[in-house]
Image (tube, rainbow, N blue to C red; front, side, top):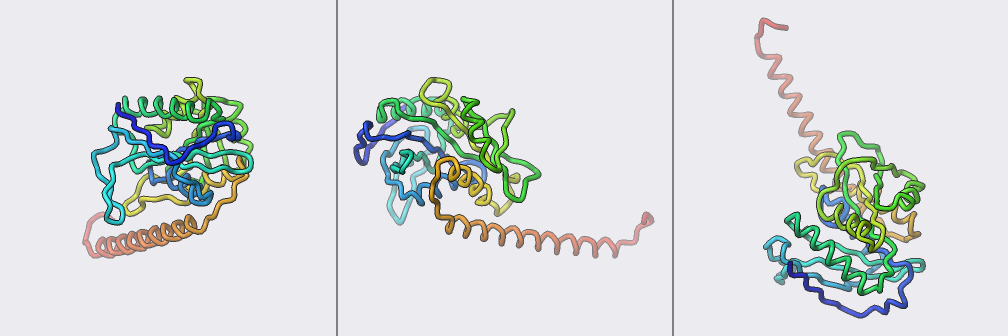
Length: 262
């Protein structure tokens, strides 16, 4: 599959310090992507790579009137203890074969750019649950159990003992770890099953950001994320009020029905 990489500036691999790849593909309630984009914006990471891949959906993107071919973006920022490469996109590869192919080619590209210095690949996503805590827990799994246990020392985390992680959020870190590039970790925040009008779960995204803050000693601005949390709370309250009105009307209608059974 065609995998075209455009570099926007050069990086000297000799200057890299414990580089980490953060991955936030779009998925359920955009939990992972919103978390990773919050970190990107707070770090003011610069666009480093644009990746055209021919199994992204055939949907041209319009931004402020300008037409674009869909592509994945990698942003870069040097911090005190780590260099961060941040991968995100508007779409994931569509076919199963393409998810594997993108993962393979991306890992090879990052290996080449950094001369094999990547310390770990970390993807963020959602774990659907019908019952979640007031602060959503972040479930952790990975290809290196010693590294998983390091994350489990962080407050509000739990081990993901079994299950599946669909798409590139699962396959890319699994590929990186099992094929010898660097250990792969998945951070999955609890979220409710998708509801009408509830297309985001910023509270779950914030839980993932907090884990990454504590792990890598990052400074993150939560203003925009907290605003989205408030917006979603208002949407949820509106849905709840409408449901209460509906149930009240149904109860009143039922009272008016003359039935033998009481």
